[in-house]
Length: 191
Image 1 (cartoon, rainbow, N blue to C red):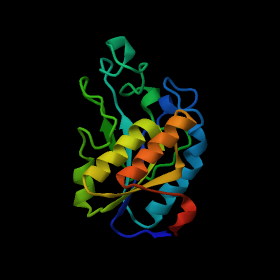
Image 2 (cartoon, rainbow, N blue to C red):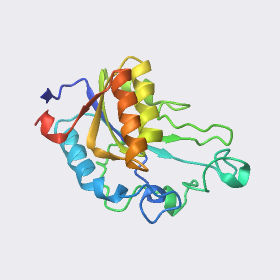
Image 3 (cartoon, rainbow, N blue to C red):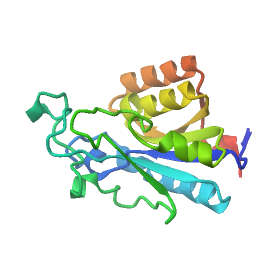
């Protein structure tokens, strides 16, 4: 069991329309974790703990896009509907929004890469981060690894993450456990 403390923060990773089942780069079933994430948001908000939401915020000429020689279809273009947070996601009004991948030449799978996330966490005395969102194998995994490398204790919220497929998601979770992350669910948190 894990009791929340004043040194904890929630990080919601890339819960955007383009990653939902009807989006440009869909994560199958990503919409089904929205109720769990909303419960986590409500829990952290009710305890006065900081919440952060990362989002891909790509310019049209982003290096990751297949039309620019990258790996992915065009997705989460700045100011587009696809870049908006997913329908039904209930982020509290004082959630910190962290834009990543907002420079044309920077991939930025981690919420820490090229952002102020670490500075904002440190300013608030955060020592432990609880991470949920999509996709487990990419931005969730890299955000967790970034946090671990920066010295945070990392909890992966297993009922609040979704991967592209079961095998690669299980491999990502295994890698995170080996790196020192702890995988828990909502029943493991003392309210």
